[in-house]
Image (tube, rainbow, N blue to C red; front, side, top):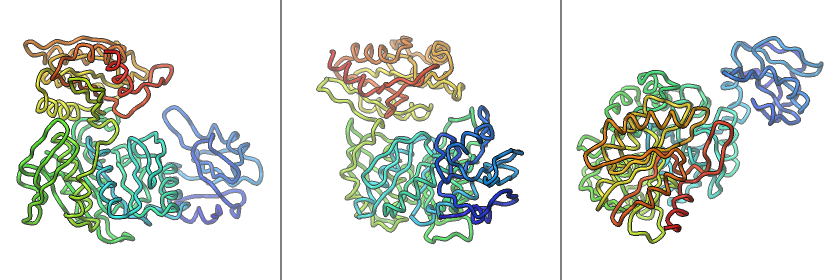
Length: 494
């Protein structure tokens, strides 16, 4: 148990009024989660000011508050005043949990696409070596074989440190994390010491937040700067970088840790060669340090060859032999909502994928093009309240590969779904090829049903954008919606 006196030792420029010897048993920045013994952190955001909830927090049992503006509290409550509560939170929360990110091997995976699959492949390989693995990412948190829901790809400092502390308590030896650009820019991973950093690729996304592509790239590079930083607690650092990506060299320039580069174009230290990709499998040779190792996988797509190479690089840094890695890879199966095949005995393929960026959509459509015998049908939309500039771009990409495109809603959030689909459709119209066509069907369920009704033998139906998500965010509510369930329902109806 820590006291206010302990906690203020790690906060720079703090002043305290009230009792400093009071014990703190819990920290939160959410007044709804306050309990007896809590330190309540008052964050100031775009829509909510935490200082407005101090009364509620004290009523709920808070014994101390961390503030950045003058407040009035009852006697007996400790008030910690700082210039910036977000910075103070980054300093004190990892300390409160005894720096759990320094007690496990921490592998961070960053990039626009491929993070989820890469983290799961790494976890699969390490589990096969007998390690207890934790995974934090877009789909869920896994601790050993238990799964928990998650709200952000990388949780905020309080949630993340709490999850990491739980992992340490459960005996996890290796934590593999998707590290988003938001998390790196906002300092959510403060207090975490990474051992290996992995860069998958970089394409347009999140410009609503980062404003410029340079800012987005700089955020990703922070992970490599952290791995390379001097005076860390752990040794055996490593960086794994996709050198085929146009930005791989830029990331490399920010890294001074031991490096493995990977690719399929003959320039990586870890190379994939002689690729054979079918509708359900992929086979290729991995060349590393002058040796060639054949690999057979139960997942498909060139993008998954890259994801696998990234995972191999990370596991080599964890001391796993190439022979053990290849043995483990032979029985890895797809991650939920990542090029997931929906099978109900139909004579055409139905694939659900999370692709929600221009590059992600192009990757899965290129794979579809390689495996299709007849036509490609694409059902997709773009999310509301997110980077609007990618909407017509994704429309053009869908038209470039698809024979029939169904433009529909994704998660419209507070925007008008009709306006979003109109922006996507502009790009579709521009890119439409001879003999290809498109329909705008705003209701996503209706669009999925229409595509599956119209599919013929040998076609591939791609349902993109939501993947593993089992909800749809509308203006006034969130409803249950799972592309995989709707696809099965449509196939059974046929």
